[in-house]
Image (cartoon, rainbow, N blue to C red):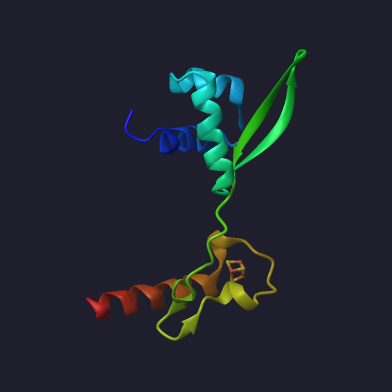
Length: 116
Ligand code: SF4
């Protein structure tokens, strides 16, 4: 196993509803002590939430991946110097029919094409 923490995190991320720690170690093919160390590290790194859960009379933990808290790169909101219209939009949003967004996307395509 190359990187057990990365493997565990991938597995936890693949279950949006979360996964019980008592199942995780079995799916990873490690013993429960090693799984506890992996989970502790992921929790300390702020990558997962560990929520106490009862399975029958046994205490275990529900593990859920935290959603990314990475800030948005402001350049992703620009087509040249034109800001994406959604930022200041008060229209009823139907993305598939949105002309302001479509216009902005055309502008983005033009900007990206001319940068090549
Ligand atoms: S997609 Fe269109 S309607 Fe929806 S928020 Fe963006 S600009 Fe507004």
